[in-house]
Image (cartoon, rainbow over all chains, first blue to last red):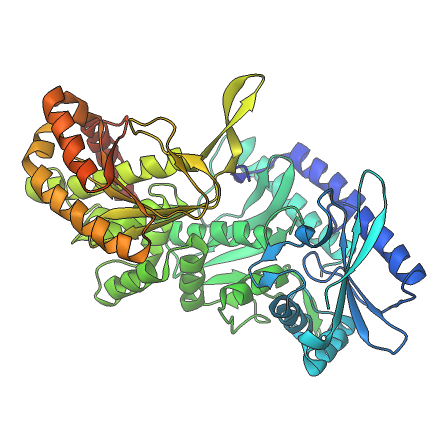
Length: 154
Length: 395
């Protein structure tokens, strides 16, 4: 990343930043991948969306299958396909048990950015059943062809 | 996660500070004092990472934060906004002479408790502390204690565990504060690998880091310069290896954004730098121009910032160290590549001597690496950095 520079802003800077916040809120960019993934998992896998407030980093979305079990859905909108699109984080690779546990813990922590009452319920359930027992699927969409593939991780 | 309305509410306070700053300082052509509110924005290109308004609260001797908005852009690493914000807040707290306590006002992610409006430590900063394994005890009271701040500063700078322990030991002995060491790195005087080379490779690192020896104390000052120049020579090699050269329109251009993925550590016993690249790269400054390092290969570089006369004088001793280094690291990794790094002054030696030295080094399965830096240049740079460090807060 380029050097991050600090500056005392003037009115023009502030006006530009306000415009950006008004347009995007707390999301810097709309995620097409997540929209496609939502369509794929509801239509193809018949999953039901769970009440979940996605933080900037963390699970993309949370669903339940026909048996009422939690399913974590990671949406990838990249050229590189499949599992290679999963990123390394400071708490293991996306989709790993360690990564799931860390995110579930943050979702239950009222001080965390990942917390909301709905997220806390999901986090508690993940920790109760054990992150290794929670299903996780990756919905990979090719930005060129817009074709989507579903990959089961667990 | 903050709602859009909450972000806009905090941003309105930020705008108010920007307007007031404009009236009080910019238009009046006056600079603010540390105890006056100052708005800052931290960006990389057109991405805003953090917006902050801070001042030194003199009575409590803490850094007070009135606005602390952060972004966590998905294309950057985790908690990047909080990292930028904390890097600034901690350095500012040190620079202003505070106790390192950071207090967030009621305007920061505020909530109502009865009729009282209260602020808190921002959620992004809390998440960053969790990532670092540091438990903040006063999140809802909105303050970070000096002890927590010190721990976060050390983690944020990214020193190795070995260096963190040595710094803490020096702190316990009353030699130097960890905050000063962190500030010297965050302030750009030393890079992390250079500071690590000083801390692990010299007998009195606190003297260099505190800039305590003045030129009038000739021997002490020269000792500091001697140690500092080794760290700077190693730093020059770090930069050369980290720099990525890309081909654009048939010409080699350096990339500002992309760096080679490379882990750098330091062996204080033999004063050597250890590199492990995560991608293939060419070895710089050696006779063999096409010598390639493969991904995952261990490279050990014995750093010796010596003038031509010193090279002659100490060559036998260096050869002994080189032999020990080769032996030590071959036992860990038989494919290790070992180099003996000298400044450009090596070129001043007669060709016959140079060839003999190359042969002797080669017989130990090592190679001589010659940096384009000269000892004179290194000494000048060392003196400049020590002088700059003298102007930094001393406690």
